[in-house]
Length: 304
Ligand code: HMG
Ligand code: MG
Image (cartoon, rainbow, N blue to C red; front, side, top):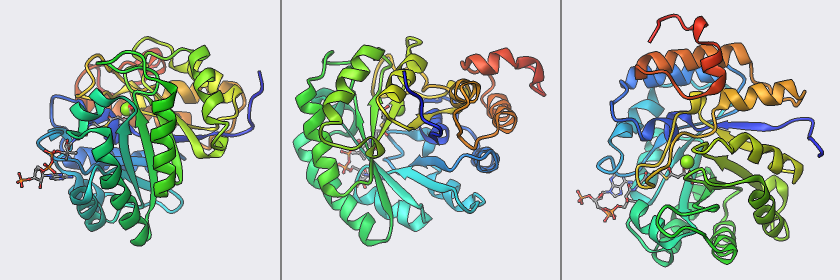
C-alpha cells in the first residue's frame, strides 16, 4: 500500500454529529465547542445546517451559531444548504462555503429532502450558481454511495450520474457518503476506480459512517487509491435521521490517532482535539462512541 505525506481532515461534528441528537445542545455550548475546534489545527469545520428546522430541530439555531463563533484565520467555515431558502439564511450568517447534498438512490433522496433526484438537480444548480455569484465556494455530497437504507445496492451508474451533475453545476469538491456505514474496503476501491476515471483524486473526499466498524479500513483503502481528504465527526457523533440504521460518523479522533501513528501529517493536535471531545461529551451527557475517547476516559474532567 502507498501512503501520502499529508491529508486534510474535515470536521463535520457540529453538523452531522449534532443533527441526530435528541436533546438540544445549547447554542452557547455549540459556539464554545466550535471555538475549541478552531484551535486544534483543523482547517475546515462544517458548522451547522440551513435545512428546514422542522426537519432537523437540533440545528434550528444555525444563524446564531454561525454569527456567534470566533473566526480563526485559515479555517474554512462551511454549512449544509439544501435549497434557495437555506442559501439566503447561510449568506445572512456569512458562511465561507456552502455544502449541497443529494443521494444516489431515489428513495433516500425523497425521504431526506422531499424531492426526486430529477427534481433536485435544478434546485441545487441554482443554489450553486447563486452561492458562487456571492463569492462562496461550494462542496457537494452524494449520499448512499455504498448502500441505501431503503433500496440496498446502489448502481455505479447512479453514483456517476449524480456526481457528474454536481461537478457540472460548479462544486469544487465531492464528498462520497457511506450514509449508513455499510461499505467495505474492496467496494470502496471498486467505486473509486470508476470515479477516478472521470475526476481527479483532489476533487474527491470520503465521508464514512462507522456503523459496522469498517470506517478506518475504508480510509486505508481510499488512501491507497490516492484520496487525501476525509470527513470525521469528533467522538464518533452523527447520523442521518432520514436514514434508518445510520449511526455515528468515523470519529475524527480515531482517524487522527491512526494517521499520526502512520506519520501522515494533518496539522491537528491530538491533545487539543481530545479536550474538545470531552467538552461535547459532557454537554451531550453520555459516553461517546469513539475508541480513542474510550481509551482516554480517565482524562475526562467530569465523569459521565
Ligand atoms: P419541503 O417541506 O419539501 O420544503 O422540505 P418546501 O420547499 O416545500 O417548503 C416548505 C416549508 O419549509 C416552507 O415554509 C419553507 O419556507 C420552509 P412555510 O411556507 O410552510 O412556512 N423551508 C425552509 N425553512 C428554513 N430553511 C430552509 C427551508 N426550506 C424550506 N432551508 C427540505 C425540503 C429540503 C427543506 C427538507 O426536506 C429538509 O430540510 N431536509 C433536510 C434533511 C436533512 O437535513 N437531512 C440530514 C442531512 S443529509 C446527511 O446527513 C447526509 C450527509 O451527511 C452525507 C452522508 O452521510 O451520506 C450529508
Ligand atoms: Mg453523514
